[in-house]
Image (cartoon, rainbow, N blue to C red; front, side, top):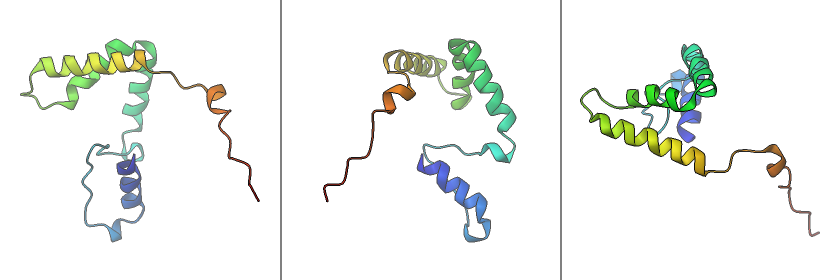
Length: 102
């Protein structure tokens, strides 16, 4: 998550940044021409998550990478998504700041 904020800060003040290396974060920002692709990906994920992941994830790897690695990654993402608890606003509404002890 920090890579995203670092990238946004660099875009906001390019005169103060010599360069950005995104490690474990995006190398692009939607405001820099990727918004259409991001919206298309979100729509594809909503329509058919397994198929969208099977198409999208292999592009994370270099062309010479073993296709089995991409397939394994797709399965890991699908398994993780199925085993984790989905976000629920009701579940987070019980988290409140502790009252002051003054």
